[in-house]
Length: 458
Image 1 (spheres, helix red, strand yellow):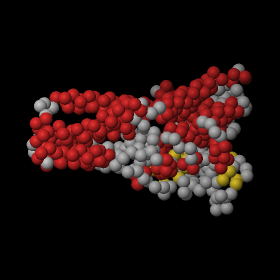
Image 2 (cartoon, rainbow, N blue to C red):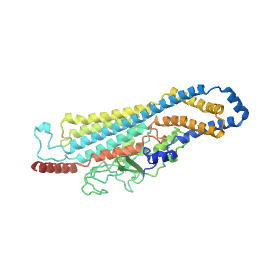
Image 3 (cartoon, one colour):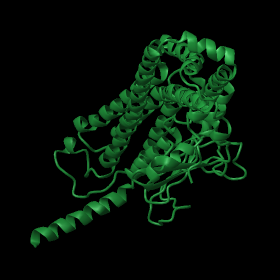
Image 4 (cartoon, rainbow, N blue to C red):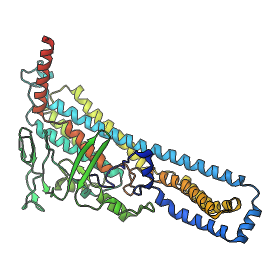
């Protein structure tokens, strides 16, 4: 089951959405309570003290001046809410663009390296007679999947302002066909340094499919304990994706207060720790040391490594046997994904304009204080004054609180964020689905050829 605070908040629309009113987690209503209490208390005092009530009634000729003020406040609140929703949806679109383009690049590399025929066809001028994957194809694709997953995780980390590499955990090993990097962890390796970087193909340990090609890698650096940092992905349906992190970390709902938004550094870091991001193959000690030493954009570092890996593979005899103009498409979609990341990073680094937020906060505060005066001059019943005051304060302040939270969709201290651990797990599922393994893909292609041949004969 999805732990609260890991993914985006999904809710039921049954019974006309009425049960949603009573939901507390992620609701802006609790954050309106302090303002409502103060405003209602002022209203009760003005309604209860006869001398104050009498003076206010005599002073009020018509509520029209306050109506104009309330209209202006309402217009400003709605404008901010619309702008916040636009920022939220733009951020989600850019993250999806980033992930889809990078997954597209992985899918292309799988096809270019695993299914191409024979020798370098633009050198030989002829196609080979045997359709077979090149030597080292599974290792190459496994490293690409790992690096792209790492790059996506680092991108989400940067968007939420998280620089702690310990918040990148090991994604659960795939149980179906395909190639994954697997960190070897045993009792004598935990906490020690692994000296070599050895790749063993067709290691099927831990897989349910005995025919599934599996890559096993001794990663240089400190070994990681998969039992303490393991993330799983479960897809329930097209509209209900759930990413669960089984690392015994504190739920974000237990860290944050429902009565206020906070950006205190210790709370910020605690929320990042509570919502780790899963990387296929994990992050080994050498990678952590390498990325920690750099005072630069880590996403661009990994992007450079991926491009260097593609170039190195293309220079091998059996690697990426595809014409260079077609191979350049991989670089293009990688660049397109980076553009999506930069657009999302623009939103993360560009706050809602401070003067607008300051003026709206001040105007709402004045509204909350002067509203009881207007109500005392026009409403005689105490209970009705309390109801009108409470509803008006909650409506105006609730919309403003909603806008304040949605305008920063990446902040980990906001429970209504984009659910970055879930997006990371869904991205891992995409790139794993795109890399089922060279042999399996070739077998399916041959099956399709047989079916097509039978259809033509019929």
